[in-house]
Length: 268
Image (tube, one colour):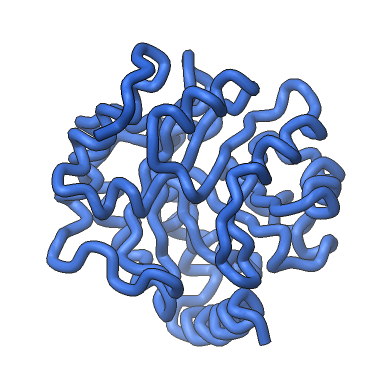
């Protein structure tokens, strides 16, 4: 069983448990109390000049283990906001990334930036859970879903005004994303079967993305030079987590990365 398959299976078990603890009707009631003035459009935040940065809160990963022990969500996300992030990503998967919906709720309370819930979304229950917890967008990983499930989850999310980052890794997955008419397409440079990283994946797939789509490059990004190169080929945004989480000063590290459009200096 691949790492991705194992994570998806554990996610389904967790969803069943949470559904028994918090019925869908309770989530729908919480969502009904969320006013329109609380919306923070995620996709709009990625369309500014230059390459927008989605800064990620990530406690650990299956490949790297613990990333930044002892830090708090408040500390990290407020540093990201001061550092110039256009949006935030908060990992909420528990078993492999030590994340939680409480991390998302905490982030929501201390920042005005739009927030992406990054998790393995496989059930409509999670769509409502995401909105009720205060996220503005969710991630759908094409590799983790059958096409009908992908289309259904996308429609469910858009119906309740959640933006969706649809993540692809190859041409077949990109075709699925385009078939559901995804507005925001994430090209993950990390292969989720073996966790190897190849930045060429973004460049190879980008030419097949029609004009008018918002393209996000994910994983393996560490320097301003990389961001400059992505801007030259038309990438709209990048998602960066581990590089920032490991930095001694996440705010300063993000400021340097955000300077991609103004300077060609090497990141120190």
